[in-house]
Length: 334
Ligand SMILES: NC(=O)c1ccc[n+]([C@@H]2O[C@H](COP(=O)([O-])OP(=O)(O)OC[C@H]3O[C@@H](n4cnc5c(N)ncnc54)[C@H](OP(=O)(O)O)[C@@H]3O)[C@@H](O)[C@H]2O)c1
Image 1 (cartoon, helix red, strand yellow):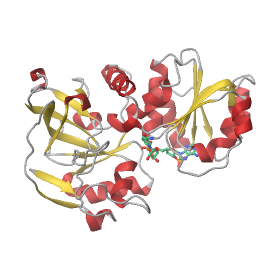
Image 2 (image 1 turned 90 degrees about the horizontal axis):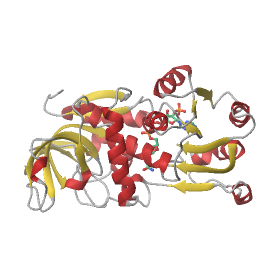
Image 3 (image 1 turned 180 degrees about the vertical axis):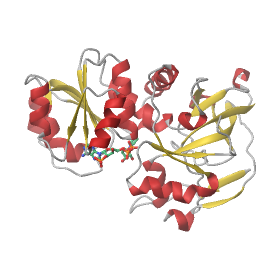
């Protein structure tokens, strides 16, 4: 099969190789998926690039943890009903796995695939795994959000935009997003944000307290815990909750434990791939339900072929992507 891989970490153009690898066979409890599209997330490029203290965990990695395709083989003890089904995939190259979706075929546990709704294209399905499941886990793992005011920082981001859509479905009474431009404000509004605030220009905490009649927001889904801590702690309501999935602005912030205690903050930091199994199962189910609905919007930041994977990785690294960068395999758009 055709596959993209790297045997050492480094710049995309230096380490990514496209070539032939043996086609895998589905093992016990596994299905084999003919991959039609794969999604590239910031963590896929981060693992490929490497950083001090984060060496290669495997001699060879096929990147792109997320994908979508058609099940063409079912292994022993896997459900034969999967055969021929269109599916979306997560954790293809995480949690102990090194052969992801940047190949013609992937074999993986049937637990890591979920049926792709007929209305959802393979390219759209490849945007669901990390972005939409992370959004779901950040929204709901601290409890129901029905009737609550939810702040999504970075509401135009791949995760943030799904968080806004899922917050609507989850019954949030009021959704507010922070953004950095008018264009991103429009994107966040399309996802369901009732209000958008430009965090680079406005007094975010002050505006949030105004918008909530002084109460503050009940729950925060945060793309930059360190960078947003000062505004977030001022804007959070008493007994509020805060789920952080990244801290790119400041990875080692100094925070006031007293301020966190004074508000009884229910705080969670999370990495999707190792959350409890039942939390990930619920996310697969509810993300699929969103995709089945009329309201679903899947932001595709760019479409590439496997041959164009270097450019695709570089677009993710540029910080300019609006949504998820997708690689379409074998020329299949269906
Ligand atoms: N923990 C996990 O399991 C998990 C899962 C998915 C993603 N992640 C991480 O989460 C980050 C975002 O991923 P993504 O795919 O959603 O990226 P993305 O599509 O680039 O979105 C990130 C968004 O956040 C905005 N942003 C950055 N700093 C911000 C701040 N301080 N306040 C408000 N908005 C801010 C960015 O826009 P501006 O810069 O223009 O503001 C951008 O719109 C990455 O670091 C990724 O590795 C973690």
